[in-house]
Length: 331
Image 1 (cartoon, rainbow, N blue to C red):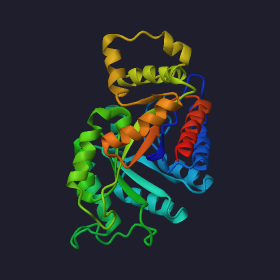
Image 2: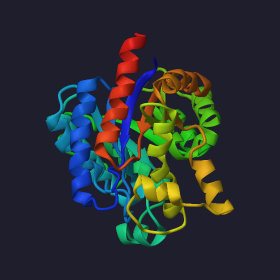
Image 3: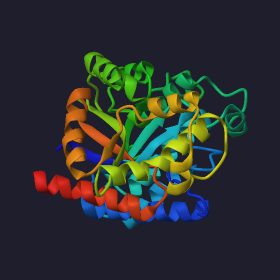
């Protein structure tokens, strides 16, 4: 079985307070640690009624203190919303507190709508690739001597900012990850159609670095493991409505299973659902056990990161537990 990790967006269901969803994510991370998952990442999104993970760096600090073994990270820190120096300082501090357990996944999109993106930054901010170059220069102390930032030393100065990953949902992110010589995480949980091509491009163009000698690719995949295939499809029904709501600009918590099953999509809405769930692994244990390793092989991925946007904490726990049991039984 391929290495497995967890991507958490703190899904907010109807009747659930966003603060409760955050606390449930902390519980789930501790559970994933006990089950043996490789890493646990928090996404960064803003102004979404169905997703509560707006501050992954805060969650990382709290969860790393509550867990023992699992790597904890950001999937990701969205560069347009942050200043590079502060990101390096924050993640060096996290690494100092939890040595060898921190991942810094970097994204190039704002993770929100245009108006909220404008509220998160100001118009004189550099272009996103300039922000990325600046962050790497701060982390590696590689500003030219004449650069005004060359004398700035991010503190604590004796540690690195965790393991830097490049995130992406297009070929551009794959090219950047390959050029920087860092691990690459593809957002297959919503853009699986491009995953195989992007990972192949990353591997083909990878340049070894001090950070990483050989390419290492991970792909996020929407995954629900139910009691059986029918149960898993029922659990997935609210996700389908949530994705349509998000893509059509409707702010709403994730609806109940009953309400979701009663929803009839227009052809345009069904196209949104079909695109998002392309490549998703949704089924009972037998189907999931068969599909996850096959998907990793098809994509050329070293690791899969499971995204289960199901509002029920009990259902998410059960899905992770079933998959963990599959891993143990197949070992």
